[in-house]
Length: 462
Ligand code: GAP
Image 1 (cartoon, rainbow, N blue to C red):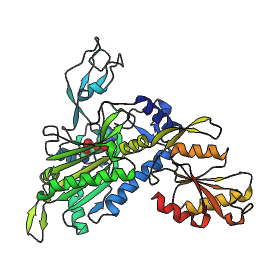
Image 2: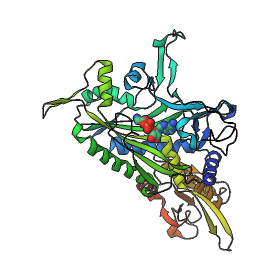
Image 3: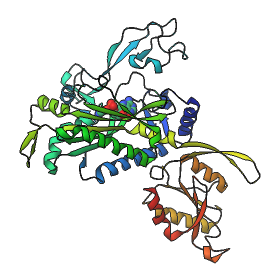
């Protein structure tokens, strides 16, 4: 069994630095000193995140007959969150240090730094004076309406702490408007907000983050089996996007550590450079959610099975993944440094993000060998125009071609195309209208006809 505490801070530092230098991720509000626990995705990070969400949506909603999509509001009616138990019940235990005035999550002290001596954990330093743990509310609220007065409790709405609740609340509408039968799922990708006491490990624990959640409604007899099936489906998904099974760990959450309504929960964890940590939970939530909303709204949410004539409250299996955490796992997994030896025996180091092509922010780099050669530039621009409606490409004509390759390696571009003198048919007429296609991982090159590029690439980048 892998050791949960093995970490590689030096690797993590390099990853964070690359992400900033190449425009994947920036701290939100950095210009003004930063907003703790919030992150902005730059051009390449936004592409990567979009690729992940699009792939998840395609695999979860579009390629399945039994899952429908929805896109719910972030602002949430307080009664929804009262019924679900979030208001008054969604909290983490917190301690204060009376000496350094730091606030710490009481169940995470072994992973945090003392405010006075970072090499110690909170409570370890002789001057530490920790209070008894108390519940800290994780919910973020706002006031709705121009006339809302500060003390009007009815004006309070909440930024949703999970996307799941709008799925439960719309379950009946979706069932009735789509004529679906059990078992079926509703999937949603979107922002969630939690006022985390100690946001940490880069984007891993943030106050604003995205989730990719499925609520799969089923007959009570099928809940346990479907939980195991969804676990397998989700593990295969991670493999498909480039996170190998060997780096994933399944925690079968023991009795007493699961949410009180859950009959079974698996945490899917990944070996991050800061330790083995949760990417996704696959939880069998029974009929808890529909039960509390049926009671809270006083409206029937039962399902009537036409064949068996049975009426019952469906049970729910919930695979709930963190989008930002998966993006971070993709970057951590893709990051590689290798030493290459050139023809003269000189060592050189290469940084590569080995993304699967479907995840890569840029699919193809397009280069003219010589930027002063008008024909080469014209052909490059034509190729760019042909590919752009289908995929994100990047034109680059600055510096030596070798350096351009390295710049693309560093951001994970799987393929680079170079238009050269052979493309113009100047040296060998047989090579006219062909280009060099260079592979990021092997650095091997092959010659391909321009006319076949789009089809060749489409087969590999989706
Ligand atoms: N609806 C169930 C639910 O929200 P959760 O375990 O609290 O369950 C599901 O969250 C997933 O959302 C986690 O596995 C994680 O990937 C992501 N997540 C939760 N809190 C997060 C945070 N503060 N920052 C980033 N991702 C978070």
